[in-house]
Amino acid sequence: MMWWGYNDMGGWGYALMGLSTVVFWGLVITAIVLAARHVSRTARTGPAFPPPTAEELLAQRYARGEIDAEEYHSRLDILHGRHDHPVGG
Image (cartoon, rainbow, N blue to C red; front, side, top):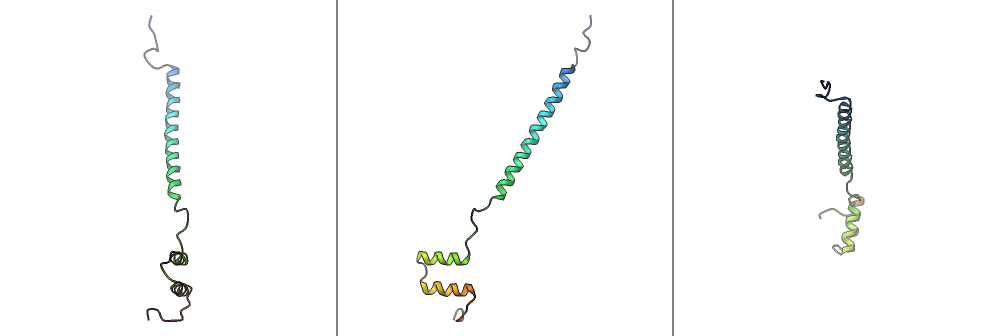
């Protein structure tokens, strides 16, 4: 007697092939989406704090003792736009 249909895939073979294809592409798409989310999340994060302003830098220099009170107030006046004396003179 001939065993018809046993040389090729049967119904279960086609079902498993279709299911495994769907699972494979689902995993590939999930990996791509997760990688894109990770890249966008790491690209979005910048410094935790904004860079210090000129006034903050000047105050830090004064606090460290790099400049005295007279120079601090003079430079602070220049930053605020109060020019009572010529610059560089």
